Length: 193
Length: 193
Image (tube, rainbow over all chains, first blue to last red; front, side, top):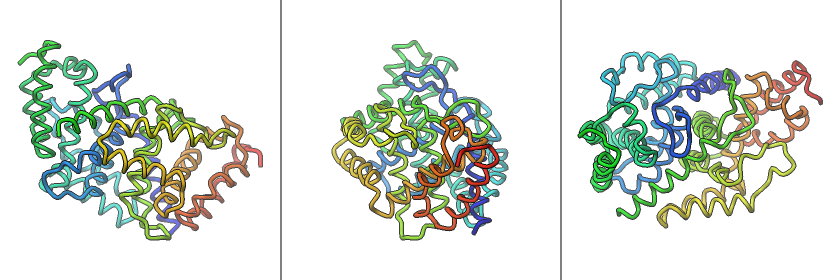
């Protein structure tokens, strides 16, 4: 059992590095960019809070575990901005997932890798809900930090509405409500259409 | 339903502030202190990874939700160092928990407040396991960052062993294994006994 504790310790020390992976968003009220570790905390909690509004039967523990794990690959690959052309970096991220989860005892490494792949493929209700929440958070943040990352990266309203349409899977009314706010905010801060 | 989404948005924007609450620990390899948001992410994942080794039947979703929520009160009260005499600040933290969870729709505010109080009272297997993990993480970090927070705050080996004895609840063998490492590290870096 000591070997398992050693492996888990190596894993948890390795993932300290996620606290050093910078995203493109500044949290409302902060002058620095957020990192992928604190982002993962926040979306896990956002998912738990919004799960009672999910359309489909969705297992909360699976969703939360996925969200806590999903960005760990960025330790190797860095954060990709959702609106960048090279956003999809699945093959490199898979290599990273395999490297990092392989630090763990056999059973956990299989479980985590499977969940990470399930999230990426977005075919199950849990993965679709988790993906929707991962999209939702930066939209909420932009609506409360003066559209900082949208302005910084010259993102258009059309791009925002297209990129985040998957939020509808979490809850269609939520997406309707958000779309109006995105359009209004875009007009207010002068984003292109 | 829109009212609920507004409330949940206000909550998730309010808790952005936890990213700005500094703890006393520097993660291995980082020159800055960690914050309570990224700490909450890491211990949620550490708990999930160690739950298969729990002695008692312990519900994972309850543990993880507790850990994601437990530090939110520090938005008002700040992080208290575990070895400080005034570490226990339950009454102020409870006020903060009530203030922040009250932002949410009724059902979630009740659920979260109840979980927060359950964690604080540490009477259920879930709360005891979650508390053990919250203690375990800084021990593992100190064992990998040259005992930084123990040295900075002049903590003795006896204090460390006393303060963290609750880790035994998560797993007695884990605690035996850690105790030896703490004693060795204390000798190596010259902590007082």
